[in-house]
Image (cartoon, rainbow, N blue to C red; front, side):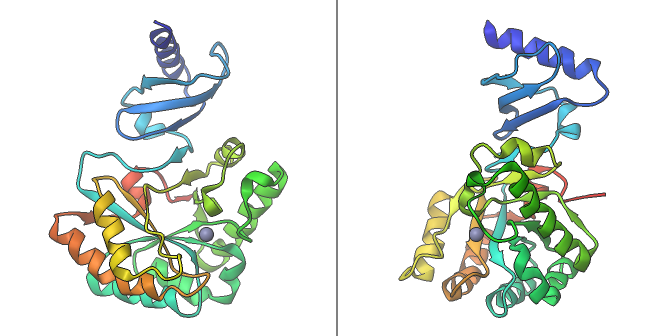
Length: 266
Ligand SMILES: [Zn+2]
């Protein structure tokens, strides 16, 4: 009964305002976990599962995501910690060979060193998103410091590509307490549903591929790394992963397409 009341309150609110309120949600498909609603006449903290009206999908504000809807055989390859001098380029070569788009969550302070790699990502149909300026644990920083990490990274990428990024993946996935300050900047937080653990030493490309296949489902967001260390396992595993998933009928899309959210802002 409580959830029905909240549902009606939210629908009434959404219908009566031209501007969608600041509503943070997580989940996939039709069901969203509403974490908080900041608007008049609605309780500040609501943790209920509610059905969001259809029109809301077109207007949904920045939020936090872990996977896409499970209705279509689509997956998103995502690469963290680039750009770098070696592995990011090798990954781009493989993606080009297979005509597969991906999303790169880049470290801001590396962007000025490798602007050509960033340009190449955009020119070859990939999406560039933020991964902070200096790879800190954002949940341990002040709100002002978090904003600085994001603004500096966005400025660095914009100066190279002309694009203003609207997605971030927090380093280590650590975001507790900072969701709101980031979403209020109009930036969505994109986590993952499959961690390939490709960064672990001693891990083989077969193990990385197996992890993907064992955890795969429509809407998966796959986490891999293109920089920040020796990524030869990631590079080795990539062709096999692409071929296996294509064989299973999966289509590769950029993560913003999977989530139906904007990658960049005006
Ligand atoms: Zn990282």
